[in-house]
Length: 79
Image (cartoon, rainbow, N blue to C red):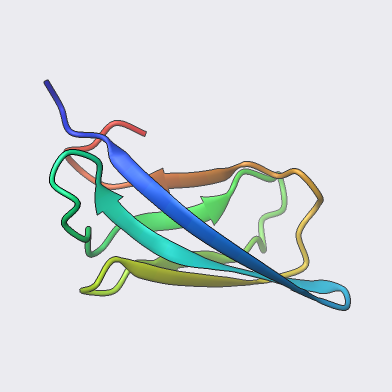
């Protein structure tokens, strides 16, 4: 069975900008996942993206459409 990602997200809205930050951890062990790619699923080529640090933390800031799903990917994990 492949491990799954677990996502904890906190949001803060500032005027037309939005900041989303959180931690990506392994759903089985709770260990942080470094190097995971995080982005909103939008057609905008200039959409903000982030990579988690060694503690599994990420931060995205930008103008984003309301309700855009957040995508997280890492080799060896199911999206």
